[in-house]
Image (cartoon, rainbow, N blue to C red; front, top):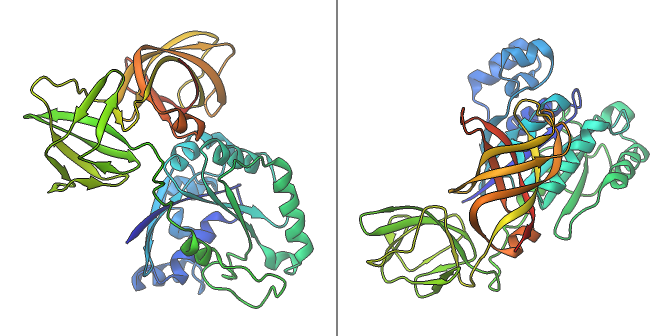
Length: 385
């Protein structure tokens, strides 16, 4: 069964918590006792927002301040809903929550023009190259289900978008409170003939394995004559001659997810026997066509730590299981939740495929050398060979 991670975001008061509650309620993913409790708290009608605003602090302030996860399952898909903050002060939480999602649902209030934080949501989705973006225009019941309002919000979003080649937008008018076009289609907007949000999610195809994709594996560790790691992209085959910089690797005995097997796919865990004089190390990437190596790059970072003044800063960079000392040239003050493009140099080379750089797939985090706290998360944008 497919597992689909869905990033959900919306400005404060746009109705995101109600939308997620409605998805869970109408997909029969709420137990009877919880539904009874929500109905009591809602005065006879289920208070859907309470289902996802789980923190008491969130309810007291009226905003979502953490990243929460909710789960539900249909006949063909297991969904992980990543509920991210809507307030501008929590951009870093949103960036972290969105970083591993395949699909995004952006909620927009039909009652008002799009605001600065919605622009930030769209910017993050473009930066992270999330391929499928569902733009849900909520509260259509409050504007009489008028098509003109929906088209107005649509034009505002299009004015600030600069979609990448593989990104696709899905436009859906909804009422999260009433449930219109969330799980099931209704007849209240006859001018709209598209799918509901859940129908749209169910129809999003899995990305096929492109046979021309350069197969890539990452080494996670070495133990007792074996290496183990993960298939990052493409198809793993034990018969492939794997390459890393000037070295080559022939694999004779391999296991996939703990079972003897010669082939694997992205996300699978692999293990294989290593030569008597291994050239493998934790954090290396090996590919069918040799990866490049670099020490100089530019990165786009979402800042998660304390504010920093201009200067040269040093941290630990982590890309997958690879770690390097990293030095950043900071030209201006950077504050929590800021997103900046910066130059970076590494203490030792790191492997990379150029196609992954071009697709914004090389995700990194920066770690404080003293406290081990995560300081920033981001993407490698360009490299210097």
